[in-house]
Amino acid sequence: MIREIAFAATGDAFITRRLPVQDEAFERLSTILKQADVRFTNLEVTLHQHEGIPAAVSGGTWAMGPPDALCDLRAYGFNLIAWANNHTLDYSYGGLEATEEYLNKHGFVHAGVGMNLASASEPRYLETAAGRVAIISATSTCHESAIAGDQRPDMIGRPGVNPLRYETIHKISPYNMQQLKSIASIVKINAAQEQSIKEGFKLPRNDDLYSFGNYLFKEDDQEGVTSRPHASDLRRIIAAIREARLQAEHIIVSIHAHEMNGEHKNQPAEFLEIFARNCIDEGAHAVIGHGPHILRGIEIYRNRPIFYSLGNFIFQNDTITHLPADFYEKYGLSHTEHVGGALEKRSQNNTIGFGVNPKIWQSVLPVWKMRDGELTELVLHPVELGYGKPRYERGWPEISANGQILAELAELSAPYGTSIEIEGGVGRVSVSGGVTSQN
Image 1: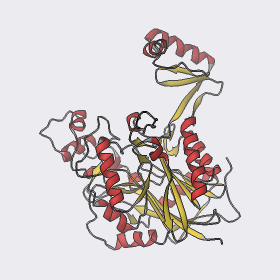
Image 2 (image 1 turned 90 degrees about the vertical axis):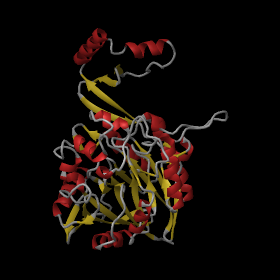
Image 3 (image 1 turned 135 degrees about the vertical axis):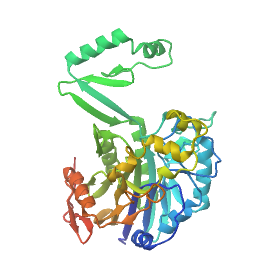
């Protein structure tokens, strides 16, 4: 029997305060979300009551919200959550464990984080009337200390996130390579690395790449930058997709990724395109990207959607109630300062940063249908989050009448061969005739 299934997805839910009222804006969004069988968001905060200890590094802001915020995510209609991202370990293992406990308590299916690498990498399953759905969640943006560790027969694993690491390769001419090596010889930038290799703490490279400090270079007449997924991480995620194919009818892959194409934040890095297409090739039915806090293009690959970034759904990073001393010290502030003043210092009195960029406060809510593994319909609802409002008011989503949001998304999607028709306040992606890219 062929069954139709409907999906809805959002980008980042950076939620740090409770929804004050379930008003008309809430009802419109909730109604759209609840039309779908599968309702996905990315949780980009830790949710706990100070059970965790602030980590030495954070995802930018030490992200913590009230656990009861999960009641509001449930009220919107979400039933599937990814939380592998650059904020997962903001409050160390205690924050991770507490967030997982509250997610379980509120009955969410969630993925991408675990007490070891096997747990963080495994598919998790959502049971719906339209079929069983698997989710696999990973992040390419995180500090190395947040990466989950594998278990051994004689040693436990390490809690953390499911990583998708990558290599960025800078291609330069033979002449420029000679100059680079000359500079390295003069400034001794590779001295510590070379000593580590001599002492057995680091393995030498066995390819044609040259390390200049932490950067990799390759001789090439066509100069530029390229990137590729870490081979072992890609193999592990593909293995999870293959497992999910045996256990579920539909598979979603979530990827949190800030990495961009050169200076273009609204375009994904090359390794993300390679990764997403590999996931579809192996059986994923959709790849949902988020992370840069702005929209990126949509690709319909083999008649399945890749959302390179859905931007923000809830964004309240300026209403954090507590921050560790590290944050204040970064901006030269003392212990007598408080959160509001510290955040004002970061934004230079709201003249730089996220608060003054209107793109941060615009996104889309896609709703799509699939039948027998094939995309049959994809509708895009434009969303705004209160750009220009005070920080204590902005950050809640509402359906927008701003046609420019969809027009700009159509422009970003066009290079992938994706056509978006805008009519009646929504965008519709052409899927008739199996319009797909095969890049």
